[in-house]
Amino acid sequence: MKKILILPGDRIGQEVTNECLKVIDYFRKSCEIELSEDLFGGASIDVHGEPLTKNVLDKALDADAVLLGAVGGPKWEKLEHNLKPEKGLLTLRKELEAFANLRPGKVFPALINSSTLKKSVLQGTDIFVVRELTGGIYFGEPRYMKEVGGKRVAANNLIYNEDEIARVARVAFEIARKRKNKVTSLDKANVLEVMQLWRDVVTEVHENEFKDVELEHLYIDNAAMQVIKRPSTFDVILAGNLFGDIISDEIAELTGSLGMLPSASIGNKNGIYEPVHGSAPDIAGQNIANPIAAILSLGMLFKYSLNLGNISDLIENGVSETLNLGFRTKDIGNENTLTCTEMGDEILKNIDKLSS
Ligand code: NAD
Image (cartoon, helix red, strand yellow):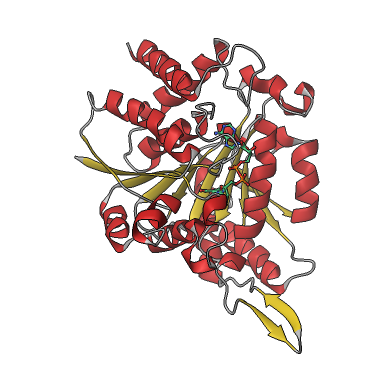
């Protein structure tokens, strides 16, 4: 029996995870899954006064995998840093030791015209970002905002040790071996000592353990240009927490919409799966969110945490077929678009068609 914990979170997080529930229900025929659902983020703050309760954290640690919707929204923005919905997210990643965030950025042929880039540049783009997730500037100490001599001063600390870099580099090289065998590592080694260490350690791991994989180093500012100029030449991109956060959103634009991008966070314990997008308060409650990123995240969950690659492939192919048939939500289409619920139903119909 595999245990999946669903944490829908806030706003469209709840809408898109509802569509995932339909897909999980469908596959319960063929594999034994125990499902539970709980409050997280703003929804948890409203009831318990904190974004992640100990009870929910214990359930997450006990599950085989956690599927998240998204958290946050203006209602909770003014809370102090430690009580914000996003703090729950960071704590969950840290406690589950999910140090590698995997973000595939694949251009579905049916959507090639939805991007702002030319079709000729985009053709064949299939990038897989591996982002370090539990270290770097988002967690470095000391961090503060205070008054010094009558002026406000704030600081954060970008710090990595060699083990943190080596373990995420290994994840990137392993994934590259199952793809096109190339890793591009991003840094700013020309300016920052911590990034020189990043480059040195990635090079050492490559030399000692993954000589068969092609390795390229790019400075982050150059990389930001190159992914727009020659996206189809990239395979796996490896980056630290901050640079990885930014470059993966840039790659999101290549695929047409944030609503298309899934992610997985894996490490020493069970995995966390979530769409890359946030809670989209601007469209919440209208049933127009695109559920594809969440459904593809569920596909990654089947592959990386439950070892059910066949179900994962069915989910991805079901999404692809739905797009090929011309079905669109509002963020990726102009007319006769489907609601979030209708898109979920259509994908399920195609999964069923492909599996019979
Ligand atoms: P966002 O990703 O929520 O939205 C950015 C834009 O993309 C919006 O115009 C939105 O309507 C659109 N969009 C996003 N997902 C979509 C989908 N599935 N279908 C159609 N359109 C979609 O980012 P934001 O507006 O910067 O942040 C909103 C809130 O979400 C904030 O509180 C932020 O902190 C939070 N956030 C949470 C996460 C997370 O839970 N992992 C990630 C990013 C932002």
